[in-house]
Image 1 (cartoon, one colour):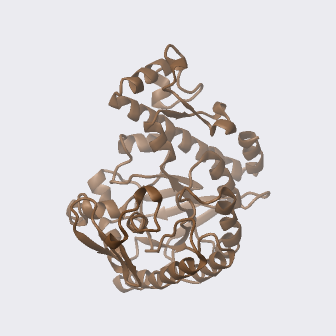
Image 2 (cartoon, helix red, strand yellow):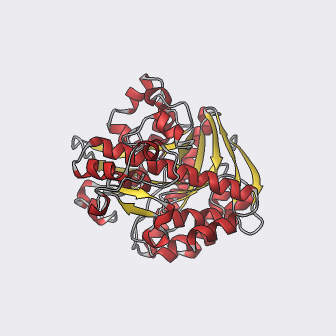
Image 3 (cartoon, one colour):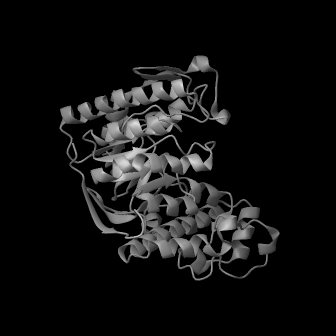
Length: 388
């Protein structure tokens, strides 16, 4: 393993922020990178060309969903994810574990089902399909095989996701399973002599400092191509704990000089905090999901409003201004706030596309701005300009 080429080109002299490039067989990922989520092999409502136009290099595809719709065999028969989606750039896949574990009694409250339908063991997780009710099993071997057949450039090791709150004993069990599964995932790739698909190990340990440090040290000594920090952004963790996890783990991860991914983080303020601590990439549904709800990202909306405003409000009914002043995206170059307001109020499908196109462009432009600031040692000044 450790065949991934990661070049750190610039380091900010007033923080741990760094800018570089991850080289894959399908192109370069410029870091720090925001990774949009394309759950079902599509970033909802937009085309590959529109993703590229947003200045984004890579997006996530969800293995759990691919297992059922359309099925890994169908994607493989089509030539892998890249040909199936007509996307020539890099692709990341998750292990599928988050969705499976979220069905358990310890998952997010809104997703819980009867615990008899989910069984977690040292081998993996047995669960009931939400689509046809069939019993399914997913473990480290099954996850890696699926990701390999999907043809992703960057794969995630199978880990046991934890959800807050959690008792320490359960966090220990989940972490130890994650460590055993990490070795299984690595061994499988080594056995298959995979050279152009890269594997990230995932740090676990919930909100317990000593467990997170133990997991970070363990993962940092294995031959993963990259590292990821998981089970932090599950919506109910106290905000201070989310970033405390970075403070606990990054001293172990940064010295490896491997790319580090933060799973499930994507608010604007969170991006600045994470990058400043040394994170190289992060993913979230924030720009796409909120776009479909009518939220338009705009720096002028300010930190208090999380840099977005609700275009559906009646005050925009006759507003002839572009959705965001001085934005050069397709949406802002061609349409007014009044028109977007009309589309959303009329529940026209075009509203989802136009809002998503803008929001992705906003995030892509932000990451460009961050990379440039790091290269010029002014990341701290840029952060203060945005977050003051």
